[in-house]
Amino acid sequence: MTNGTWNWDPNSFLDDFPIEDTPGVKLLLSSAGVLIAGRGESINKVLNSDQHSLGECINTLFPETTGNSGLQEAHAKAMEGDLQSCRLRVGGRDIAWELTSVNTKRGREVLALAIALTDIQPQKMDPTTGIPTRRVVIAQAEETFNRNPNAQWAVLRLKIVGMRRINQALGQDMGDHALYQAVGRIARSLAEGECVGRVGGNEFILIIHYISDDHTVERMQAMDRLFDDPLKVGVLHFMLRLNAGIARSPEDGSTVRDLERRATIALERTRRSGSNCSFFSLTLEDHVLAYSWVPAEAQRALRECEFQLYYQPVVDTRTGETVSMEALIRWQHPWRKLILPGHFIPVIEEMQLIVSLDLWVLERASHEAMSMGKPVAVNITANTIAAPDFLEKLDQVLIRSGLPPSWLTLELTERVFSSPELMLEPLKAVHERGVQIAADDFGVGYSSLSYLWQYPLDKLKLDGSFIRAAALDLRAKNLVTGLVPLTSTLGITLIAECVETKDERIWLHEAGVFLQQGYYFARPAPFS
Image (tube, rainbow, N blue to C red; front, side, top):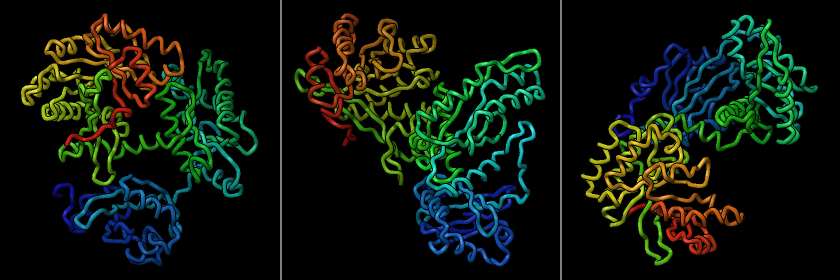
């Protein structure tokens, strides 16, 4: 591979993507879905025996003549850079497909794995709970959906929370007995035509009638209240709760499997948010799909300089002068185009790649600030501040760039300030070097006045949502007005960010907030 492009040799190319021990067919397809090369188990073992050549099979599976819109759609999405998985009935067999786009010297192409699923008949009833298995429920639901295409349904991925405590305290056998009781409560609450099936462990799939989001939440809460009475297992009593992810038909998907997958995505949001149910949204799916490509491609993007910095000015409204710039990262992906940080920063943080990215931003922004002749602010995460060699890296950046320490501001979110036992000493050391420290997004989340005196802060940035709330709520506006003398007394500079309208600029200026930043003044733009 040279510069991220595969040397064109179908045989060696396919060798780089082993099927390992899974019998299947490995295919390389053009952007139009035409077969270029293939390898793997003989295709006539996977599909009907009357299809003898690989080429014939691909002609059957791919172009428009097949009418197989599901596979064509997956191929098109894979060309856009998203990993695609689907299961389709082809040639009398269930085939699991996985498609991903790759670079070759011929351009963008798609690597596909086609895996024949087993012929063994699945178990129809779950032996532990006595309810149908997931496969049976999905098959029944598909028939119901087909018979009533205009009916509305909600698919829930349900988790019974608290089962682990029972298994740990009493063992698996008693845990199975408890699960049987718990599922009985849920099953008895279902209306005619609705069904529940076990996915595995303490997770289940429910198909229920959909009337509205509010009605579905009420149903979910009613099921959860079934567990207000403790579950008796032996001589002990246990409290259980229900969590759910919800996808709606046809709004969130046209097939039961799509709805189940999206309900599973919503269940993960429920787990993270601490609520008991969440609805699917495309934003959630975008975040989940990002996990399939961001970690590996971010490392490549750093090597190949795909990240770039945009800058937004901070303006003094008394003079109209730009007093500093904030550096904002963007990802200029080769085929996904410009990607904003909200789509990749959370994934990079969770995958522990954020320190490398933060240091790259710090280095680039410091050099470009010298070229612009303006002070610069850089967003830094808690992981980077806590890194053992961060202060050493910071010193090296200042020396290499020649940037005066007072021209550099590190902008930190409230998560940094929530851990004084970890963050206080490093931030004091940063401040002693003359580097400025700003608290970003003040006014949202759990912003606390305590860190105004506890930490060595130089600047406080008011969040845009707080500014817009203050325009509508007198108490919020009075709070902003009250912050002006407070921060002045503490020697902290107050900055309003995300200022978007003339009215916001005027009332903030009249309140004494003279340093402002936002679309009203200028949109972020690359340094040139």
